[in-house]
Length: 154
Image 1 (cartoon, rainbow, N blue to C red):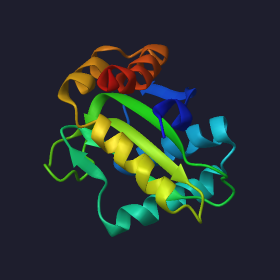
Image 2 (image 1 turned 180 degrees about the vertical axis):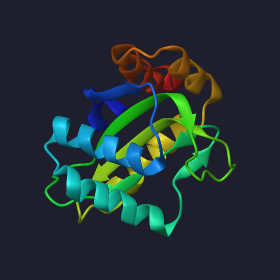
Image 3 (image 1 turned 30 degrees about the vertical axis):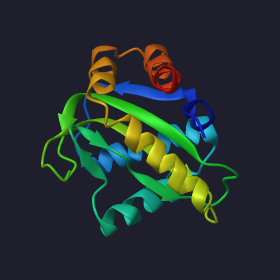
């Protein structure tokens, strides 16, 4: 599995500010609806339900919200760069500004876990995160994310 398989370039946004974690999850659901035709209401409910199990803020300004959503055939992603970080109840209590959401089919097994591992491993790289924060252009963010794997593999 590769980033290019998970993420469409249209599924990337830079948001100047978001008032709360809940508002950000709504923004992610709206983005998933626009790009992947996922019903926004159902998607945000799935994201909120997952957050009740434990926050998906993994630290260092990164959050990885994820949910299983009816009507999907494959695991897909959406990325939001926040110009103004927000509280996401992250494990390190630091505000979040890099948010990569994953949406998986309801019956997804190992593919969902592989995608989550890929995104988590990638966004653990401090150099990559610095590049993402320094480049608010969606096209550049897409290039950074999709080319990072190739550079790491070389």
